[in-house]
Image (cartoon, rainbow, N blue to C red; front, side, top):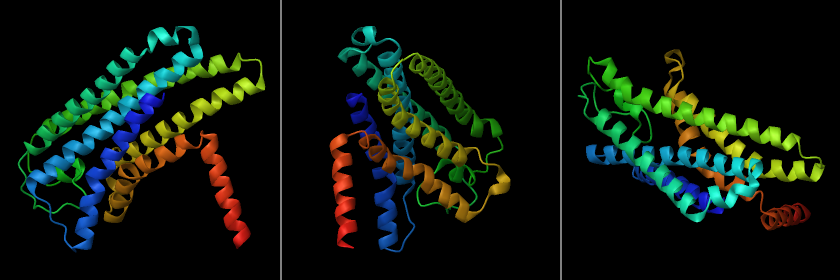
Length: 254
């Protein structure tokens, strides 16, 4: 789990570093300029880290499933080599998905201006500038990504059904608490990641407004990577004790 958490932290850091520094630079210098190549690179790296993160969350679900439902086979199914192969597959799938999306998006002719309504280069905003008459070219990569995401979602749901069935067979309350404390942080991260991504890409056109688009872009591009370390760190007893000491000390001073 800690090996996969390290990879998840790297994907979170990468997605934040792809969008936030440029947005801060533009804000400080009162500009909204970005080069064409810079925009393409931003699209690629953002999709790369986001796609890899979803794959890693799916693998972490499998890790929880094996550790709870098949604990005697954990060392065989999730040895160091198997974990390395799965992490490499997650990064490779993220690279492939990002490359396909970027190539498809920037191969379309752009003729409706060059102003994006976001603080970073985002595929839905770029497609609004396209004058291509081929709707299929605009949506086929998105459909591919949706199918892959749905497959991961089904796998996660199936795994958690099996996990909760196994938990209900545990006789002790302490066993219930220990198992849920292991699974709930991951389930919270997955739920927040999927809900914000769904709002971002599957909202109906009738809900369009510049302020709403900006809010949902911040919601799915910055909030999940920022919250993931906090959610997983709350399982650390030393960190919780330090936070409690800090909060009680602050309340006593006031």
